[in-house]
Amino acid sequence: NLSDRLEAIGKRLRGKGRLTEDNIQDTLREVRMALLEADVALPVVKDFVAAVRERALGAEVMKSLTPGQAFIKIVNDELVQVMGEANDALDLSVRPPAVVMLAGLQGSGKTTSIAKLGRWLQERDQKKVLAVSVDIHRPAAIDQLQRLAGEVGIDFFPTEPGADPAATGEAALERARTGYYDVLLVDTAGRLSIDEQMMDEARRVHHAVAPAETLFVVDSMTGQDAANTARAFDAALPLTGVILTKADGDARGGAALSIRQVTGKPIKFLGVGEKTDALEPFYPDRMASRILGMGDVLSLVEEVERKVDRQQAERMAGKLKKGKGFDLEDMRDQLQQVTQMGGMGGLMDKLPGMGQMSEQVSQQMNDGQLRRQIAIINAMTPGERRRPDVLNGSRKRRVASGAGLQVQDVNRLLKQHKQMQKMMKQFKKGGMQKMMRQLGG
Ligand code: GDP
Ligand code: MG
Image: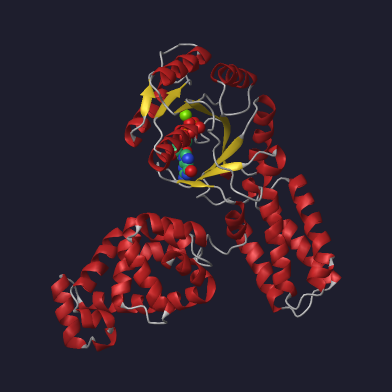
C-alpha cells in the first residue's frame, strides 16, 4: 500500500549521501507508482508529482546535508497542502437550529455518520440535537436512524412513510425551531450509483432546509470512484465539506488526496470504525504522516487522553523521561488501557512503523489473553512487578497458582514483557518523546 511504498522510498533515500537529478527522477517515478497504486486519481497524481519535482530539483534538496529527509519533507508538505493545510471544523454559527445535511451514495456511511455527529455535538459541544431521515423510500433506513439516535441519546423526528422528502425536512426543521434545538441533522436517501432522481431529491431537500453545512459522505475504500462521485455531488449541491468514512480500512490516503483536489472542499471528519464514537476531525498533517507511514501519533495521544486515566499517563511519561525501564506494573497499565481501547489491533495501527505487526500482536492478544495476563501480574508482589528478574522457579509456581494458570503462562507473559520493553525503547527514539511531552504537559 501507499504507506509501505513511501516508507521504503524514504528508507532508501535516508541511506543516500546525495541526491542527483537522476535519482530524483527514479524516486519521483516511485512516488507516482505508489500514488497510483493507492488509487489516487490520475490528474491529482500528475499535479502532485510535478509539484514535488519542482521543489526537489530546487536548491533546498540538492544542497541539503540530508537530502533524503529533505525529500520526504517535501512530499509530506505537498501532501498536507493538497489535503488543505488545516482542520476545518463544522461551521454552525447561524441562528439555531443549524441544519447539517448529509448526502452520498447508499452504503457510504451517512446514517452511521449522523449518529456519530449527533454524539459528537452532544458530548463535546453540549448541543441539543434532532435527527431526521428523509430516506422515505426505505423504511429500514429510517428504523436504522431511529435505533442509532436512541443509542447515542439524540432526539429523532419520525418520518411519515411515503411522505415527500422535502416536506419531511421542512416539518423536522419546524419541530427543531419550536423545540429549541441547536442542530438538526438530516439523513438523505442514497442510491448505489449516481442518478438524476437522487440528485434532484437532494436538491429539493437542500432547498427546503437551507443547511449551514452540506456534507458529502464518501467511502474511502472506493478509491478512484470516490473522486468521480465527489465531482457529481459537488456539481449538484453546494457542498461545504466532506466526511471520509471507513478510513479504518486499507485504502486510506488515496481518496483523501483526490477528493480535496477534485472538489476543493475540505474534508472535515474521518469515519474510523462502525461504532458511534469512531469519528475524528480531519487533520491534513496527520493524514500526511499516516500516508508516509509514520503512524498517527497525535491521534493516538488524543485517544489515550480521552480514555485513559491522566495520572497514569503522567506517571508513565515521567518514568520514560527519567529513562527508567518499562516494568510489569507499566505493562499491566498498558494491558488495561488496551482493553479499554478496543484491543491491541486498533492501538498498534496507530503507532509508528507497527502497522505490519498489528495483526500478529492482536492474534496473540485477544481479550481473554489480556485478562489472563493481567491476572498473572496481579498475582505478583509489587517487588516482583518492578523487578521481574527475581522471579525464580518457585516464585513463578506461586504466581501461576495464584492466577489459576500454568508456569508456562507466566513464562510467556515474561517473554512478552521483554518484547514490549524493547518496543518501548524503539518507540522512545521515534515519535514517543513528543507524545509523552504532550501527555505529561
Ligand atoms: P448509508 O447507506 O450511507 O446510510 O450507510 P450506513 O451508515 O448504513 O453504513 C453502511 C455500512 O458501512 C454499515 O455497515 C456501517 O456500519 C459501515 N460504516 C459506516 N461508517 C464506517 C466507518 O467509518 N468505518 C467502518 N469500518 N464501517 C463504517
Ligand atoms: Mg442510510
